[in-house]
Length: 162
Image (spheres, rainbow, N blue to C red):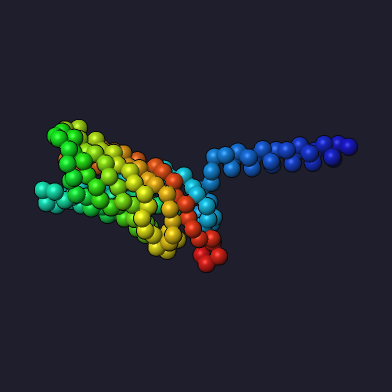
């Protein structure tokens, strides 16, 4: 009877831990299918451009499968200073492949605050066929910026060929 009670306690404990792990999500990069939340940090530099086009680069960390670099190209689409609107693409390059997001957003030229979001529009490697949306919020100061990237990525592939 004592052995049965110990077994049941161990089983209940294991199920509880599994439930907690599932509720919190997983950073396990071996699961290539399904949707996963994204939360990453970007630190980058505005490389400038013309009066209406801007290019940026950033290093992405704390983002699991998105860890790597980005290159973004934006066009100023309107707005009234200090708040300008923009649209463009952000391309992530990781050891897993590439992922492109089409974004639109706002940039405050006085405070440096920016906010943008959009859908995933292309992917290669592990990101082939991926869907989802990502948002970018941050602050730029003298060309350097930090940003938080959040959203959801739904991977189309299973892990059979990793």
